[in-house]
Image (cartoon, rainbow, N blue to C red; front, side):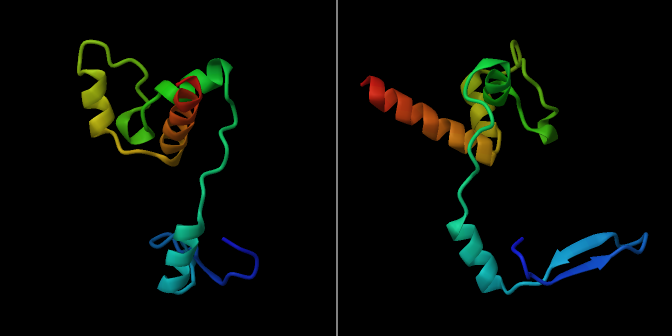
Length: 98
């Protein structure tokens, strides 16, 4: 949401919505220009958590031992912006090592 964007708030108990009133073209332009924010941590426990935890819709599971292989879990999980950013960072670090 940018300063000056029109919004509509419907606080009725049956609705409870907040809508951003911009055109579809503006949505697409903003999506195309969006870049994920930097990770809040790049080392330590929080960084390890960011790397290992599943999404909230998957129960935030951090230990999948004995249920599926790592590749099966990775393929099944949707990529959040944090995961995509993390993969890019790993690729960058691997390229530096090569």
